[in-house]
Image 1: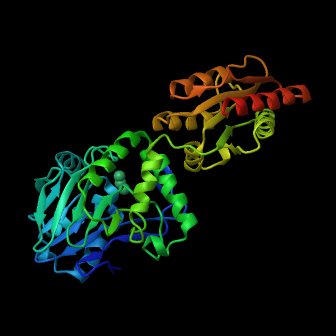
Image 2 (image 1 turned 180 degrees about the horizontal axis):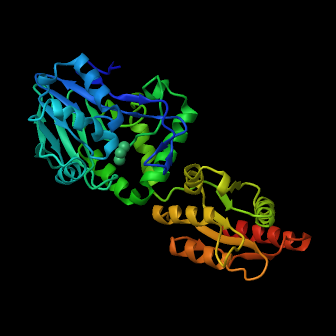
Image 3 (image 1 turned 90 degrees about the horizontal axis):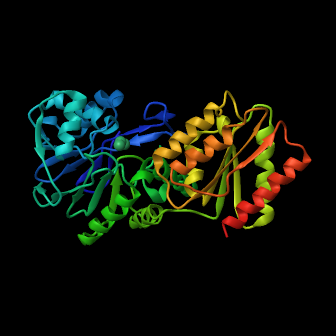
Length: 396
Ligand code: FEO
């Protein structure tokens, strides 16, 4: 399948309707994904990015239906991660001497993955590659989200090929942002940002300011996953600026796991207390072991506070809580408050452990946390409600 985007640019990627886990098992892709690759034809022809390895051979066959491979003059690898470079390996077997344009870190990553000495041409921000009437201008984007990442900008058609940035794991037949289901599109965009880009937010803001500073007109933003932004393409840039600035909504997220429902009952009573203390606050509760962790992280991203609860087991916390706390720590959220809670029967270490982990992860802690002995009775649940009110007060 291919799709003509402009007179000069053809999408030659892959819509992957089936994928449900990405990055190994780390990222859920409820709505599939796409690997966007682009063929740019002027007096010279360039391929920008490819597809994930399992689709590599199909990609090359598909590309061959569009162009004689020998007519390809340049290959641009904006990013070496295998979801974009898997097809490069298949393509370079057919055109081994053609130059591959990428950053210096791109050479290291591509060699690290494929152990090949392709004809690498290292580019830096501002370098231009003439295709004839049109140029490709390269912009390094280190740590957005790998050291090798870069953007390519096509003059004439004024298209920014942004690779992972502004992308979404979202398979859609419509291909363009204005043809997509807007609620689904927003959800996949924010999930992608929350789970992948949050730690790099300071760099996101700086990079956007830098690119906007070039004053280049942008008719379209074509990322390497999901829809192509053609209708008001800068809307996703504006959205990223907002998300990059310690984003939060008027929301509290309560995460818990539970064995005999003690910690669950605490979570629900705390939620009642929060709503009683501030009816305007949105409160969402998640049984973490039964919830998709990437969806949970997305809700944490939207929150001004997160409460985490686990009963004590073997002087520690339940494994789902340990896992989500590890994920949250790595994402380095800023400007959020947090608190710990949990039921216990004898030693009762869980609250202290969760409190410490949240504190170490950069959250401003509300109080010392709340414990309930055995299964909470009405008095204990009243304490939970009062604790919820205290949380609501702390967020005023
Ligand atoms: Fe879509 Fe960083 O790869």
